[in-house]
Length: 447
Image (cartoon, rainbow, N blue to C red; front, side, top):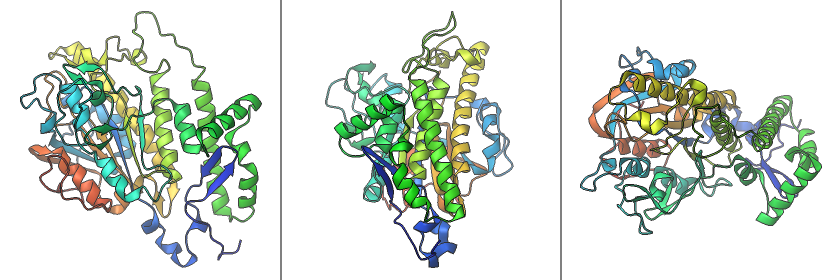
């Protein structure tokens, strides 16, 4: 291969109704800058929301600093311990009633990424605030195909009364473009796949999808000619990267198709899960893999995922939880309820561990996707029984391109604004911001 040959970072393989972005390849980096791979890797942010609080004694590490041990809930994250910064003491004051009465679940979702008090209304006059991901978008939207990626396990709801006089728009959305406009998330993996890899207008994308279904062809078949021309010019390392990427895309495609045919039934005695009538774990892992692919191909640099909305009452039969999550979260210190809630919290952590596995498996520059990403995993309710909004369950994973020093547990004074963390992330990402929601300044102790 001619070392002087280069292709742009945003290169696509194209076919009818199809456009596949490429992962970071050596030929995208100027030859004189090979040693500076890491500095050229883009930084990303992701946010994964978990509902209904946690069992604090099985969540909070037993020591501060780097000598902490993982409690039962976080044990599935043990392989990634050195990539975790566990933050204790953060709070979302604007998720509290502050004179507005009941509605903690709706306020929790609306406040998580905005740090703002949601206007109590079940009508169209909703109001929250701009979310951290959309502030970041203002810097990155011209650099990526998709400004941001909004995902959910539940699907969007924009109208109706969902929680004590609060609009469903608060409870089923994390991202807010402005104070009156939430960005509805997508829960259908097939539609997410088409959004990421479709090309042209909706009619062309639909035509491409229909042709693939009718001919039983893969997305890769539609870009094969472009791919073969590119491969002939690549070196051994880039060919390996491209092959790994194509394999991941094809596996995702097969899983999307299989999921559409999955059975609906549950064992006798268990309630049907809210949301998608398919296996919840498979669904979540697939959506997390979509996020990984989106980052790997630099289609977007920020993503939000509502793993489940606050107040979600899904049951988890495969881990022996018969009752609904929300119902169990009002545990009243009942030992059986606390055990069931701990199992749910732990299971969610195991799904998050899958995401970290994926990010860590993708090499980029002299590191991995995980090294160049910051991911917040957590929620805006601390204890579900009391609907408390302090001592929030919050993990910051990744290194943000080296700006964050993980492998530690940091405890902050009670009621330290969670918005301070969001503000600090923006500054780390190169988006200088003076204030976000009820922030009072940058969060110390991240580096």
